[in-house]
Amino acid sequence: MTEAELPEREGMDYDVVVVGAGPAGLATAIRLKQLAEEKGADISVVVVEKGSEAGAHILSGAVIDPIGLDRLLPGWREESDAPLVTQVTDDRFYLLGPAGGVRLPNFAMPPLMNNHGNYIGSLGNVVRWLAQKAEAVGVEIYPGFAASEVLYDENGAVRGVATGDMGVDREGQPKGEFTRGMELRGRYTVFAEGARGHLTKRLIARFGLDAGREPPKFGIGLKELWKVAPEKHQPGLVQHAFGWPLDGKTGGGAFLYHMEDCQVMVGFVVHLNYQNPYLSPFDEFQRFKTHPTFRDTFEGGKRISYGARAITEGGYQSVPRLSFPGGVLVGCAAGFVNVPRIKGSHNAVLSGMLAAEHLFGPLVEGRGYDEVSSYEAAWRASDVGRDLHRVRNVKPLWSRFGTYLGIPLGALDMWTNTLGFSFFGTQKHGKTDAASLKPASEFKPIAYPKPDGVLTFDKLSSVFISNTNHEEDQPVHLKVRDLDLQKRSEHDVFAGPSNRYCPAGVYEWVEEASGPRFQINAQNCVHCKTCDIKDPNQNIDWTAPEGGGGPNYPNM
Ligand SMILES: Cc1cc2nc3c(=O)[nH]c(=O)nc-3n(C[C@H](O)[C@H](O)[C@H](O)COP(=O)(O)OP(=O)(O)OC[C@H]3O[C@@H](n4cnc5c(N)ncnc54)[C@H](O)[C@@H]3O)c2cc1C
Ligand code: SF4
Image (cartoon, rainbow, N blue to C red):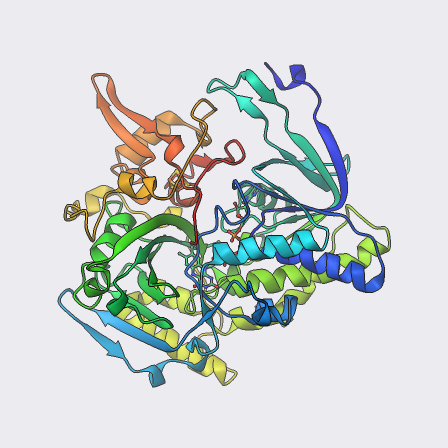
């Protein structure tokens, strides 16, 4: 059936449509409703979320700086169901070699790296709690609906989004239970899709929002939740490590956060500007857990959950223009992670609030579908801008000089920025992550150890505990633009890196009599967006599968 033959979509009209029920989207919605309540205005706000519930697709560390929650919902700590209860009590940094590690003295760390006053917890649970708060102030939330298309008016301004059709088979034909998507129309649409939002990517291209900005940069973050033996558990302990198992040219590192109930969250981030196509972030993570400094934590414990998600790393110089006719970007859709602190959730909340405060005036004046450029003009002088400005050179220095020189230079720069100056100005990132990959002929394959099933695992058993679920009979949501290019370049030149960078075993080159065939096991996709970022030819587009599909993370 062609688009023209499909029944018309029904629509609903709101003042503001928010895409994504993460911390950024929910903070925007709550703040709009708070302002409406304060000023006696009536503003309707709807939030669409592709996960089966708010929080289902959220994967974070997380050590959370409470500045955002304190501003949005002062008094949250006193509430009986407060989603964060474990404060950081001990903060440690390690540089690892293959056989051992050194603990770096805390006094060498710039003050902004101090985690005192921060909380260890599950961002997914914070989001579940924020969703309840939002509904309590009258926000409508529709989980299980992916926004799959941006709607534009006759002047080219954004006028809302459409959710995807449900009940379409693999060939794109309607099935028995076919339901047409809905149009959610708003005077303003807030894109809060998180890192590498697929609609955000199209908006950036359409409105040229990246003009004059550095390219966006990303890492892939892999995470497991463990229940550890009680004698290994130190609630409040935060550990960060870099060095082994990554080589000095590859950026990244590990985190271990001990939260309540013997739960330890262990994660590993690999910067996606790595060069060696044989590198497998998943296997590096598994190797990390065997390091003598950390393996003891996991021995006698049990792995509960697994997942992966891209994290934005471009920072201050990569943030695109945040406003365009009819809409704005908030949170990690714009890329507000403070890289050395590995924190972005506080800026997600703060940017959502800032956007709401700038949209509110135009809304009560009856405006809509125009550009609220005051938000773009304001963010650099806000707490979000100040937070990112001080650390803007850490990632580019790390990329340029490698781990052993780049990190000390980054630390020096953070110190001097604390005092109000920098020797480095504002460094550029240069290349995109896709362009950083080098041909396989320049490297040797990496022999990763086999998983032992106790401390280290394979991808498929890992995806199993991410509770990932997709309707199987639907169009493949990972769109390869040119299969021939994929074979000629991704396979022949780069030796099929998708098989290694995908943390869920979605991509395989299957050898057949007629030659290698690119197989896409789309039902395993955990929506991390790494393929969309790292494919060397930008030949893979992540699009939204049927709403409700994807991981069902518990407290991740
Ligand atoms: C491994 C890792 C560790 C991290 N550690 C920390 C940490 O310790 N502390 C910290 O503060 N930050 C940390 N971060 C960063 C933090 O998670 C992000 O900054 C934060 O989640 C950004 O919030 P957001 O609302 O912008 O996006 P997200 O949290 O990604 O939320 C976006 C939401 O939008 C939904 N969505 C996306 N597209 C659509 C669509 N088209 N239709 C409907 N719904 C859609 C998604 O399903 C999701 O629920 C970490 C990130 C990673 C990956
Ligand atoms: S297919 Fe892409 S988005 Fe899905 S899990 Fe693999 S790399 Fe991540």
